[in-house]
Image (cartoon, rainbow, N blue to C red; front, side, top):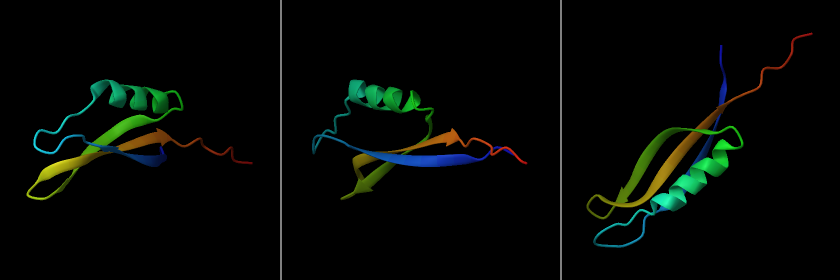
Length: 70
């Protein structure tokens, strides 16, 4: 059975009335983690103040290396 480890990263959304997401920053962040074997598993918007998204939480996972049985 595959086993995974997880990592979360929060990305703060810029702007108040019209939120702005810098796609190039997110792409670089995900690519940097992918080089370490992490894959994007899920994205969760974090909301406050009448549903306004203030940040995005990226949930990353990578398969854990199996320990060799003796």
